[in-house]
Length: 310
Image (tube, rainbow, N blue to C red; front, side, top):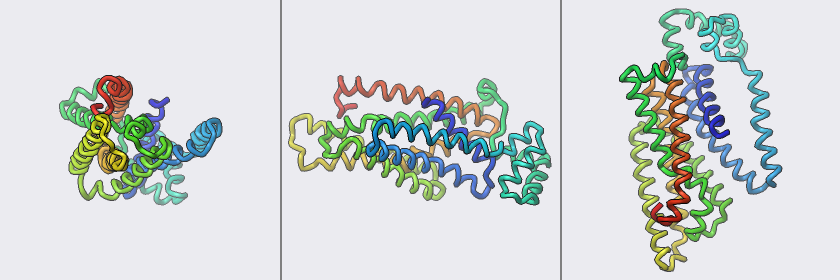
């Protein structure tokens, strides 16, 4: 189910890139991460306030409503054009342009011109290449490697461990916060940082944000490790209970401003449209493998090495 969810997120971004006007396409795609964090925050709040049955009923209702509403949305014009369905493509464009047939006709004519069509389609990732064909080009292999490594670094940063085992981490750190409150606070921090990322990602660049995110993550985890080690040695740290909260909060914030979304931006910028679907598929598999390794290894590392070493 998690795999289907991940693929759905990728497909949503691709659909947006195909139907959105060029002037707002990048903003809409970037907003996907903000919307995901809004959903996470609301689910944490609902999980604390509602019963188990009520919570699951809402979680079932929301995607059901979304599926029903999606049935009214048209297929993307570039996809229809790639299948030779020009009438359906025009109808879809008219709907997306709010009924302005002249604007739809103008864009359709541009798509029919060979050079314009090639440029237009290249912005929306229309391709039929398989994963095997992707590896034939050295440039494609390099782009694939960069993308996979970027997402692997994202997963191995430990963010899934922090969110999944937040209750255990805060409990061993001696935090006065309940697991539910801790999760809500982390979700709020992640949402705020993703909004900041939306503003600064084009101003500061991709690599600086990645470097900043890595350095801050390392500092925060080192601080938390030292605190947990001192606590394990029997030192009274009652007056310093704010340190693990601040360290984890800053860790989540630093992840949100860089590692949370920059790998996705890098993937879209280094991968040509002809290989992007194959890269998306490869990334989905590699991310699942990385998440499985991280989450399954954490309990064993915690048991044999201690939380401060893990």
